[in-house]
Image (cartoon, rainbow, N blue to C red):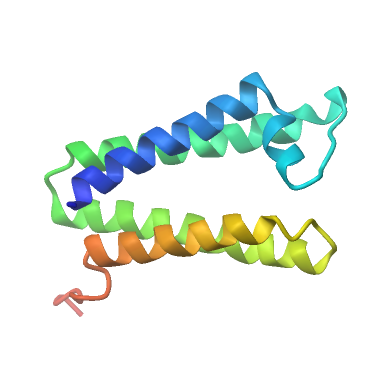
Length: 128
């Protein structure tokens, strides 16, 4: 696998998650036992906006030839997934269904993949 392939896969999955959050807003929350009333779908729509933005970032990263830009793309994706994992763990401490641990695990895998293929752990900026 290469970073570009990882970015394409990530973009497709992230875009699909955003689309599901718009088309069937109750589907993803229902997996962890959360029932949403139609009036609360705005939360899913806002999350879909974030998913579409991260998908765009991933697709942009595929096209970028600039190393600094690619590092920024990779680091932003890592921060997105790391912060979301921390917030999901916080939600778990608040009594959310333990099924959410699966999503936390997937985020850790995504962080590890982007860290490895994005070279985050291998190279340091030499301009310091």
